[in-house]
Image (cartoon, rainbow, N blue to C red; front, side):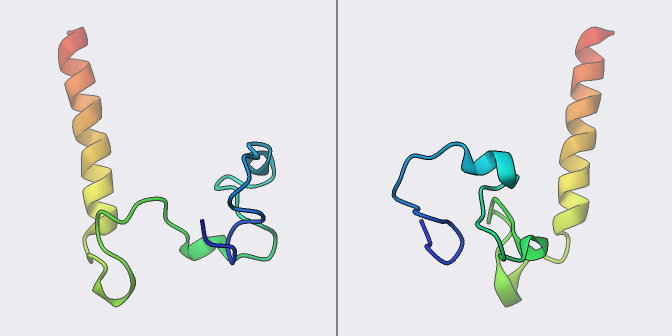
Length: 69
């Protein structure tokens, strides 16, 4: 809902996601954009964020594999 990131944030406009993965307006630096804050943000961000996300993905794969076999 931040107007610095979204053009007309109060308006229902799903087409904004066609131009950008997160629906951000042009000129916003998406390199630092995250869609969840479960691992903190800013100076207090978890240093194991990428490792934890990789492990979640790996455990999901192993769980799916166990149900298939």
